[in-house]
Image (tube, rainbow, N blue to C red; front, side, top):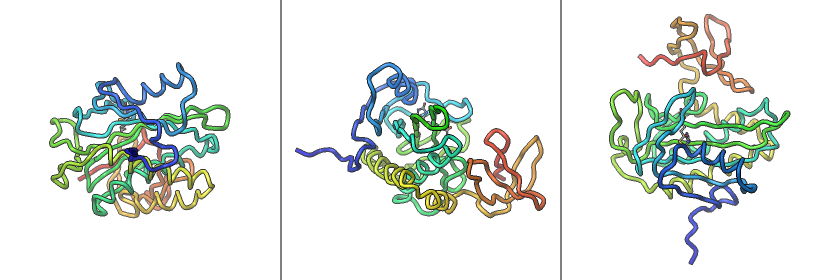
Length: 256
Ligand code: BTN
């Protein structure tokens, strides 16, 4: 009987589900260094991560069994290291488009790769690229999405979940299969050289694009307008008539 719900060519075809692990990114990176070559598209999914990692050394907390926490192995050797943000764009688009089948256009990609609904964070990514020379040898794409979690502990900040928005539970495996197939679609566009399509699609979904908003840089709050994202992934903000570029550590979005 055919019971493989993963309809793509390779992303998700080799799926390992773990009851508990420190971090699916750590697990996949260990597998890569310690075992025979793994097929591209291998996915490690965890029901419970007890030491999930987020961007900028943050922890990623997720209630066991309620959410999606998984990592995908890609081998984007066709991407030059200077263009690695194109991979971030492609992955963000795949995740975004899947959730957009459930949610209205309050859904946005917050630069660089957070998934937001209105002003709350639904999920994020930790993409760890192994660069060799000018090329990306392999990439461990870790994705955490809040799906069926009812509430978040105080202090977790501005997190939300699909359950909090739609008051329904969703089948995690089905969502995972959909995300895998959409990631694969965008990844193949990238591989085929459709960079402009990837970059413009990312921009149309960008949180706060072309809106006067408050930011903080160098300890100073200011009003600016996100104009775009540079090829190398830096955020471009118009500030006092000039376009200034920022990396993740340099800029903070100030929600009123
Ligand atoms: C962020 O927004 O800070 C990134 C969160 C990334 C979390 C995912 S969950 C699966 C994978 N394993 C990890 O340890 N982190 C990523």
